[in-house]
Structure formats: structure tokens, C-alpha cells
Amino acid sequence: MARAQNRFVCQACGSVHSKWAGRCDACGEWNTIAEEVTDGPAHAGSLAAKAGSGRVLSLESLAGASDPPPRLATGLQEFDRVCGGGLVPGTAFLIGGDPGIGKSTLLLQLSARLSATGDRVAYISGEEAIDQIRLRARRLGLDQAPVALAAATTVRDILATLDGSDPPARHLIIDSIQTMWSDALEAAPGTVSQVRACAQELIAFCKRRSMTLFLVGHVTKEGQLAGPRVLEHMVDTVLHFEGERTHHFRILRTVKNRFGPTDEIGVFEMTEAGLTEVANPSEMFLGERSGAVPGAAIFAGMEGSRPVVVEIQALVAPTPFGTPRRSVIGWDTSRLAMILAVLDTRCALTLGGSDIYLNVAGGLKISEPAADLAVAAALVSSHQGIALPRQAVVFGEISLSGEVRAVVHAAQRLKEAKKLGFTEAWTPPLKRGDRAQHKNTPDPSLTVETVDVIQALVEHISQLPPPR
Ligand code: TYD
Ligand code: MG
Image 1 (tube, helix red, strand yellow):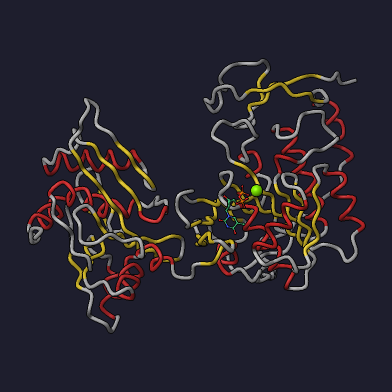
Image 2 (cartoon, protein in one colour; image 1 turned 135 degrees about the horizontal axis):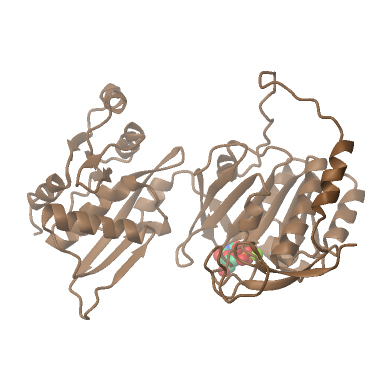
């Protein structure tokens, strides 16, 4: 018989070790390995012996008629957008985000919208008492929504309740998966084994009934709670809810989606009355725009299928200390280092010895290399003390050789800029398709200024009229 055996599991990445160690070899995190009780190793031999008694599967061909999955509009358009155009019944979602970012608020609002479609929604909180949730619902003006509420942490109880509920629930919200506990395991709630076991039970239950499942997952830097990374493989769709705590804007981003595209974003604003949807993010982000000051460049970006125009602010200042400071919000630090190196090598513009602060306005996180040219423009503008024209947008990817490369969806970026009243765009040489599309648009009010190498950018900025 299998002997109960303890194993050591990294709480950050879920890898299993034979003995305890201070650092996980697999992910390199410190102090994340914890001891967990298991039921002993599976007998490989007995599994092989059973292979002969398996059920014979019918193998199918690739060709065949399968309808696209039906989609349910949740009533929260920004949420539907990140799902790929509405909910596919039976989807298991994982919604991750920092504590306090607004996950519970979002899901409570979503449950109210879903319950308005006539579907029964069960909202199970393992974190807050019923009264707390009621208070929040009242604050959001949702206290009359027919959402079925419970404060519980035992998966067996939750499933037993849902099994007998009449009418049956169509959507289940679990806030959060780290607080759930399955009695099939001895491990403590929040450990990787518990999180995995609870998620497995909940997902299997919901799949059998074609119920949508929303699991809230915490992300902590310390890795004290099981990072939801082990869960990402188990669910169909992973959404990240992000934003700066100091800003009102919240962005829901698709990281994985079995039923739609990834990298779509939904934009919300956190207000006194909860999250409100932002249909036109560019307008909102540009609302944060500074005046005509050196160091501000407007980037025409794309987030998924949606163009987003946003300001990038840079400040290049002399270093009061020996080591220059780098502070980057909303962009990649190593990408900044690359651009500084290119400016240094190709344009003899040495910024490396200065303090550099770089900020994407509104708390948006940009991961597109297309922002390179706008970042470079903001840096050069701040360094030279010359403001960029306020009616110009900038985009383009910078290569190590200093060339400015074409980026995807150039025509769409130009269209959005035009719509917002910009009259000038600094872009890499446009691809043929984009060029044609741009020419065909009837409104000629946007001048395209081609920047093919980074030297041309620096030259162009130095020729701008100096500040008055
Ligand atoms: P919450 O949904 O509890 O975050 P999470 O579940 O991700 O931990 O939201 C927490 C923050 O949102 C809290 O700091 C207060 C703020 N908030 C508002 O600003 N307006 C509101 O209407 C609500 C409900 C919350
Ligand atoms: Mg919460």
C-alpha cells in the first residue's frame, strides 16, 4: 500500500522538491518552499497494468461541422470585449490582480449584470462577511439585484449547495480561490496543493453543468499565497486586473483565452459608485495630458484590437548622487536602457549619467515596442529642453542599429489620432498596405512625417522652435 509521504512544493511556481531548500531551483524565488502532505506516489506499474482495460475512444477527423460557441452578453461591455465578444457558457475564468485593485467590486457588478439577464448567479466569498458584501452592494446601488450570496470556504459545502439549488445557478463566483479549502487534502488553505485541488473540483463541477466559473486569484510578490500561475493551465481564460492604486483607471487585460484573442483590454474608472466603463480610453488618457512642455510625447498605441493614444512623459535631470536614478512607470526598464544605449551610440547623446524618470500617463502599462520612438522623442525633448508639437503623435520600433521599423496597425493608429484632432504623425516608413489605407481616407488633415533612423528624430527635434 502507498505510504503517506510529505513533499516540498514551491508556493510560487508549484514545482515539487524532494527536500526543503531556501531557494527554489525552478523559479529562483526565496523562501517559497513549503512542506505538504500527500497520499504517496502513484504506482506506475499498476497504471500500466490497467491500460489493457481502458475504454476504446472513437477517433474523429479534423473536418466536420462545429458551430462557434454561443456567447452571452454580460451587460458589461468592457468585460464582453476582453472575453472576445461575450461569455461562452462553461468557461472557467481566473481573474488575478493586486489586493485592493477592485476585483471584488468588478465581480459584484458583473454578478448584478448577469443576474439581470435572468440567469441565477451565486457569489461565494471566502474573504468577506455577508454584511460587508451587502454594504458594498448598497454603495454600488446593486442591493436589489437577485444575486445569491454566501460566505463560505469549504468546497464540499459550496458544491452541495449548488447541486440542490433551484433554479440551478448558471454562474459561480469564488472570491478568492486562495481562501477555499478541500477536505480531500490535509494541506492548509492557500497552499499550491489546496488551490489546485479546489480549483479542479470547482472547474469539473461547473464544466459538467455548463456553468461559468469566475475564480478570483491574488497575486503577491512575496509568494506567501500560492501564485495563481499553477491555475493558469487549468482555466480557459486568464484576466489580469491592473492599474496604479494612485490612479482611478483600471485595466482588465486578457492574458490567456481559449475562446478569443488575447491582449484585449477593458478600461474602467474606479469612482465613488464603483467601476464605470470607459468606452473611449484615448480621450480619458489624454485628459491627463500636460501642456506644451519639454519631455512629453504622445504615443499612438494599440491594445489588442483597440487604438489607445496616451502621453509618455520623460524627465532627464542631473544626478545629485554618484549613481543615476532610473524610475519607470508603465514601461519596461530594460527597453529604456536599450533606447538610451542606441541614443548614445548612434546620436552621441549621452543621457546615461543623468537621472531619468519615465512615466506613461494614466497608469497604463505599455508592452509594445512600437512605443520606442515616442519614448526616445520624450527623452530627447526633455534633454534638449524643446517641447514637441502638441498636435503630433509618435510611434515606431527602434532597432539596435538605430533604424526605425514599421509597426503593425499603423493605419488604425493614424485613424485614431486623426479622430482625436491630431494633425501630425511621426512614423516609420509605412508598409504598403498601411500607406494605401492612409491615402484612401478622405480627410487629408493629418501630415505624416517619416522618421527612418533615430538620428532623423534627434535632428527633427533640434529644429523645432525653441521654448518661448
Ligand atoms: P475591492 O474590490 O475590495 O478590491 P480587491 O477585491 O481587488 O481586493 O476594492 C478595493 C478598493 O476599491 C478600495 O480601496 C475602495 C475602492 N472602491 C472605490 O473606490 N469605490 C467603490 O465604489 C468601491 C466598492 C470600492
Ligand atoms: Mg476582494
